[in-house]
Image (cartoon, rainbow, N blue to C red):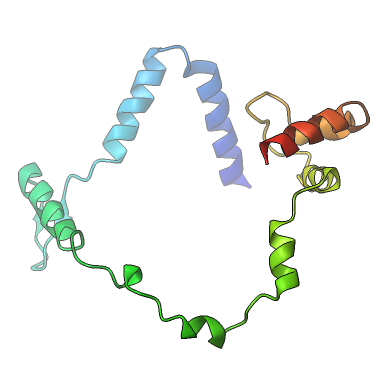
Length: 147
């Protein structure tokens, strides 16, 4: 709970100080860049290497070994394996591709907890639930239009 409190407090500080190209904003960006920077590593002999050029070279060579190799995930799949495990019936397959209904939209919206964060429009699920009788039809149509 304390960790959640600190996260919320950080968001409040960000909203209050961090969005107007202020010194706080730039300081937080600088801090993030520093915390994401890998400045050293320990080699196989247990020595800590902190020379930036050597660190870059080490990671470049490390990941170069992974990239460019052929992957077994993209090789041909044996079709017989599909029949060995559970297979969907035709009815289950049709259920997966049937169109959504207004009832599905309402059920999905009402399954979202009312205390969730606001959406990009500034409204949360509590708003839509409270006004469902007035705007539910339009909301459902808009969502079904997307799908």
